[in-house]
Every structure is written in C-alpha cells, then in structure tokens.
Image 1: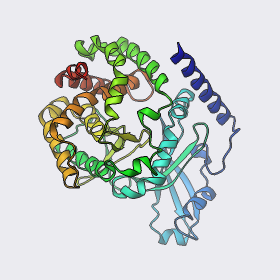
Image 2: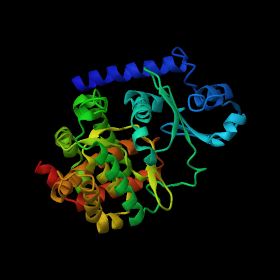
Image 3: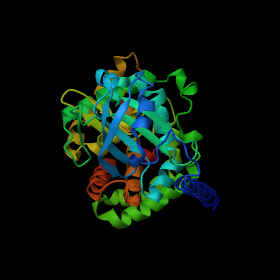
Image 4: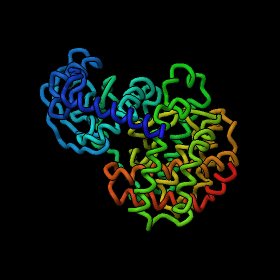
Length: 386
C-alpha cells in the first residue's frame, strides 16, 4: 500500500509538471519546444559558442519522427564564417516526445536530464565513441530539453535495430568499445566525486514505483506475448519480481564503472570499421557486465549468442586487461552475465507493456531472445543460489 501511495504522489507531481510545461508556464528561450521553433537566430546563438562570428542564414526541416523522444534532421546554410568552419550542412535534433504519457515517462525517470548532463560532462572524454554534440540543455522541471548533434546519416554511418542481422564482427566492435568506456572509469574515485550524480540503485527515488511497474508490466506482457516466452520464465515471472531488489543489491557490488545502461543495438551506429553509442538517457554506475550482457542477450540472434558469448566475454576481459584491470575473472563475469539477463528481461517486459516505446516486431524479437537466454544460462538457478 505504501508503494502505491508514494508512487501515485510522484506520478501526479510529474503529470502536473508536464501540464505546466505544455501550457508554457516554464518557458525557456534557450530550449525551443519543437522543431518548428528552431530558428536561424537560435542556431546562431548556439553555434557562436563554437565559432565566433558564425551566422545561420536559414534552417529547413528534413525529417521528424516522434517516439520515446522526437528525432529530427535539419538542413542549415551559413554566412562566410560558417562556410569556412567545419559545421555540417545538416544536423540532428532530439527533443521531447509529442505524446503526453511518454512525456510523463521521460520526466519521471529524469531521462532528458541524465542525457544532457552526459553530453555536457562526460562525452568530451570519449569523443570518438559518441556523436558530436553542439548543444545539450534540459529544464530543471518537466520534460523540456534539446540536443543538437552532428548528422550521422550524412557521415556515412548506418543503424540497426534488434530485428537486424548483428554479426559476430559487429559484436566484437561493440565489446571493444564497451571495454574502452568501462575501463576508463573502472572503480574510479570520480564515481564518488564529480560523477557521483550518476544514478545508482541505492540513490533511486523510483524504487517503489519500479516495483509496481514490474508487476504491471509482467501481467500485460504475459497476456499479450505469452506465446513466445518459454514456460519456465512465464512460471517464474512473479518470483523474478520478488527477487529483483536482491538482484539490484548484487549488481551494486564492486567492481563498478560508468555504464550506458541501455546497450541494445538500436542505440548504436556503425561503419565498416567502427561504431559508437547513442541515447545515453539511462546512464548510471554499475557493473560493466550489465552493458555486455544486455547487448548479447537482446541484440544478438540466439544462435550467434550461443556460439560466441563466452568468446565475447573473454574479449571484454582482454580489453580491460589491456588497460591494467584484472579484478574481474571469467568465472565472475559469467556469473554476472547469468544474473544480468534478468535486467534485460525487465527492460523487455516494460517496453512490451508500454506499447509505444518500440514496434511489435522489435518487442517480440527482444522478448523471445531474452526468455531463451534465461533458460540457456540457467539464470533461474543462479537467482535461486543468490
């Protein structure tokens, strides 16, 4: 009952904030509310922070799609200073979603504030592994935010989702990049210093809400997608939810690092020789294997995961060893992999239950792969032994 009362209060507060934001009560000229509000004058102010004297002469919308957030591409023309700079002729924008309920979701879980803070404070340290951000700002209250990036489409990169073919070569690139990112912040004193703002389970204000969400998501997901979920996982759904706080306590154990938190292939971009990560909305402190396991379980076709997951974990450990990190061995990493499959499972059932976060083919692929992995890895046995 207490979980319900506290969660209802938090949801009501966020709904009120979104309503006020929609009514423009918290107007902020530095954060345009929509793609249509992006003007040459606003872009000029933003880009002059990078190159003095640049002026944007025109801006033209090229495309716009709204889901968890609104994504848009715009074309720009510049004055002579801008033409001589390295500013691209097209850029990418990320803004709040159009749908009211999704705005509440983004605001409730601080997704925009997490991501804008990442781009302002962390991304300059791993520049080659993330898109270049020209501007990142969010409101203190409500869902309002804006991100202005380089246009990766124009840079020749391509994108995948979990229904796309993810090859062993793709997987090796991903694991090497995760090793670089995790290794840089591995057990760093900064995690209790300037990076102490990164979310952790023990600082999470939404613990009670998350418990209710898991129960709601399980019921809805089993009702709609039960046909593709293995029986042992369906039968253990309530048990997994009951043990989830214990899992979080286990995942809070060292070694800890900075992690992406949502490392499925749909949040990545690829070329023939490298890759990088998008959508840093759920950055946090955690065990590096959370990212590794989530990627392998959700994004690799089951036959690829089965054939390569052990080798990919060894590759990850080799990457860490190359950075002087030796406090995680294969047996420990494998055990973490078995248990982090439940993080992937919860992410999948919440996405499936929400209905608006991903398309049904993506939802089905993720659920089927995750349920199968839990069985393959005997993750339920590991959970009982926890």
